[in-house]
Length: 278
Length: 310
Image (cartoon, helix red, strand yellow):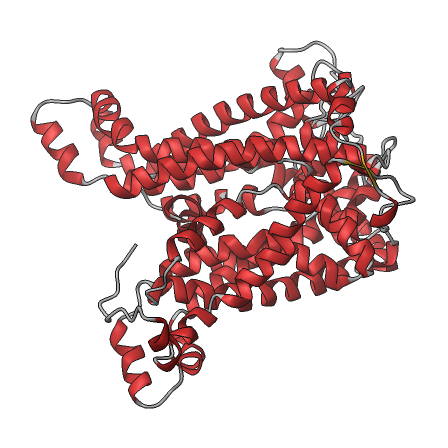
């Protein structure tokens, strides 16, 4: 018996790992499964761990809901622009901090690490006050800017580590060929760090997609609401339509899960680079 | 940091002729953005905390009176402030303990080289990536009083005899939001610890085996001491991230019932955007900000140390 166990140790380990994953990710499974249940089945006792028949009603209600579709569109606009903005701002500074021998580079790095820790709810109020003055509430521009504040420092730290890894010779060669510094940066250096850029784009998109407090505070009017702000109207205090809510949750998680699956190889390294090594 | 080999041109005259200013120009967009939209708001928040600000004079600074520390004394006199203060530390402490210990167990297990370990490590991260408001909605459904699956499972096992309305009871609401937050934090702790574990050289373990050390000994005499810097940084980061949690609490309990699951960021949000006492909300934010800043300094201290030791 023990010989058998030893021989198949790997299989047992994989099996146990799988069980751990299934238990840990049960909330995700339950969200998915509940979204395919009729309201009768939702209330069934004992609960069913797999829907009796895949009921699509929750989804058809959702996709006919003009408000929901609008929230989804708003979230997409905000997330895409926040992503582009944070990359465009973060890439040059992280390049300079990694490759140029700048005075004060240490201070700038320190600033990025510290500023990354500022709680978004501490900035939400002053941003709201400032943006009210400047007419930037109920505007995508304002909330995009607010979203960039959450991802810019993190992305800059992640990108810096990948710029450090580029061989110096390439830039020198481009420089001799008469490329200006910024030209070298865009033509030579940026393409070399494409995988890191994609990872960072994924991060900032995911952050902005799930962001809540800035959207809540800066976008009071319903027509500008994002999916996360809209979600709270689905979470009613009493008599929540759980099937509908879980269908909304599933559709709203989908972009995150898809992007995650596409980039997961790099994301693990990115989290470590942005948090610990700084 | 890596030092470049290119010669340093220090003199100011040479600075522009040599094109050194171009090197600095790379930092301008981000630094300008950080100054305008991050540092200035922090300053603005401090200024607001010393002013009387309500909905009518929010956008007109000339109508705002400086009132010294009145906002601070008002919130210090508010029992809900102290309630949220206390809740914050319970929330942070329990979140950290469970996130860290389960995350550590996961890291140790998924560090083993078995088939599928790699994608299992990755897929766990979905819990961390998913929007907090959605996770909050899911946990609200899992913990629902009448028909939630948690109640069903607990009753099946026989731990409870009748369903508990977890989110609507002052005794269980804080524990419930902690549960949700722990679930989000486990993958993050796992990933960071995993990278730390993988950084420990195999030679150490090999020589320990030669000396006859078992796996328990190896864990306590090699893994834990070698991970100490990572652990310190991770706990501090965990503290900072947990300290600012807002969305899952909003989704699960809205800080209730009777403020029993309200933590500091939520308190400050309510002061500002529910009661429109913007000055007091700013004062409450200032307090969380000071606490975070203190921790950030500790973080820098430890991460510098780690870099030197690494």
